[in-house]
Length: 315
Image 1 (cartoon, one colour):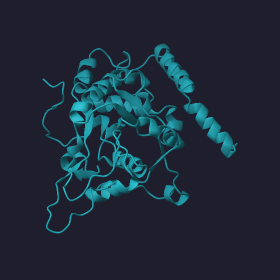
Image 2 (cartoon, rainbow, N blue to C red):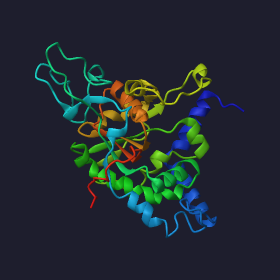
Image 3 (cartoon, rainbow, N blue to C red):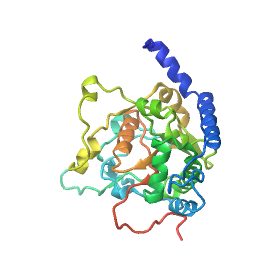
């Protein structure tokens, strides 16, 4: 039976209500206690993560670091927020709000003839960990196999990354954290939003989560029937523009964004590969007049042979 549009909206609000989310979370945790579970890393029947695997997972999650250099799809801006004398900076409040006309997708417009272009750099991203062997298995179990108890090992890493973000992003707090929203199909299949699930509980001082600011755009039926193409063979410019309109701001954003004046906006996601999802989030917020100062992710895919972590907690 298909619900009327009003009923569907009301049901969606009920499912996403904080009380409903807390009840569902308690039910999942109780089921995890009553039913025997296998270690998500080695497969032995010894809890969510067995004692032998805990040290390896915790070690991978200790070192937050700047991760944008290996993500080819991230938006580009003049490095170090360079402001040239001939071009006045856009009007901007302390909270990072700019007029939509001042936003940019691949940096600022071309410079006048004879004036050298400032070097363009990808927007800054802080990762709590590299997408290594243990971290990848833990995240996949958490996202795709309903092992929500794994969040107990991931949340401390998120907390460390947020605590380090002010220094690593070179931006002052306080901050408003905007989670990348789950798709309707993904939420329906899992019963929870994995990104928002990682942000439950206390956050470091100066951080506030703005849930419900973004939503997926409804795709036309003809688009849903098309075969999704991968990023393989696409140039960096194509990666930045592909799928950039997948998100939109919501009524909640319109009602709450003005309260964030004086707070810098930071985007949050679970995994960064090419950076295309962060780029789409960036585009939606810029279209609404807000330019984030950076992003934080749980894990980032890095190129083989990269140097060891150089986060604040490195030895």
